[in-house]
Image: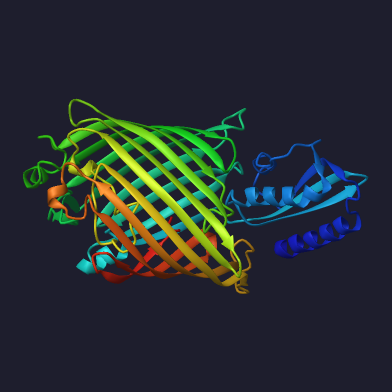
Length: 461
């Protein structure tokens, strides 16, 4: 009934809007109404708008303005659908945004591989290297776009995480905060990287690695598209005596533990048409951070990074993406565990089985996609809840090329892929579906002559 009522409201609104079009050259935005938000507070939606009541707008620009703001509301990722309608009487415009809310409380089961990706796990084919558990997320807590997240993970890697995000402080529509605690323990530890491959030590009893952190951040949120954050975290890491014997460079000290405070400043300008699988717009992300080690348990270092991606629509349902990412790390006496570059969050596709450490790196990616299928909603009649019974499905055929280069002045003798141009490319099928899930199957080849099929989740850049 809720879904039927929403559709009926949309139809009636469109009829009314069509009955009173704007015939004046300049219109005045008189009122904004919100419909369909049973949980979400009005101010959460209204603060995303780029116009204010009383603003004048050229009639020929009105639809573009309202559509741009519809996209901003949709990118809050609180709604399955956002639509708008308006009436115009003697140049006075009343705008109505209709939303269909998502389910905000949901458990997500964890059944994952203990390695960096599926193909890295497939090399070992060890069924013990499985993680399981659940993540319980309460999105849009109190209807204020706040998030509460609890992760309980058991198995090969054990995690407990709790976080709380508040986008708006009391009395403020610009500043918010985030707090979180996390504890990680594992039966195995990647104690060294040789020939660009991870080498693991597995301990029969106990855990050879333990990481605990407490973090807090102040977020300056101009809009859903423009945000800055200042984050402060305290981190404690502890390893077994065996790791120090196997590789003294792991912490690069004689200690089995270290404590440090990390301070990070980040800036994001996200102007993509949709955040899950963008097709048009741009994305910019930059940050600077410094790690301060306590009690001489390590050498401090500064990390500076930046990323920019451009998304473009082409004729006949083709889309082109091009972008780059750079990072530089300043310091001395880097430990192996801090000498991270390509192979984790950032990588050249085709090198999924390799880890390329270093203090600095540059990464270039481009891709050409063709939309094969785009179904706005597959209705599941056996589910009555309108927040769960409609599943979108889109398929894209994607061809891509990646290139990257890592500079390592410390451990390069052990790893031949450092200080070398890495090139990879291939073709893939991307599936975009329910609740912003992106599944990717990609067949790649790299400069070293390796070929393979890789399965991943999330947008590739």
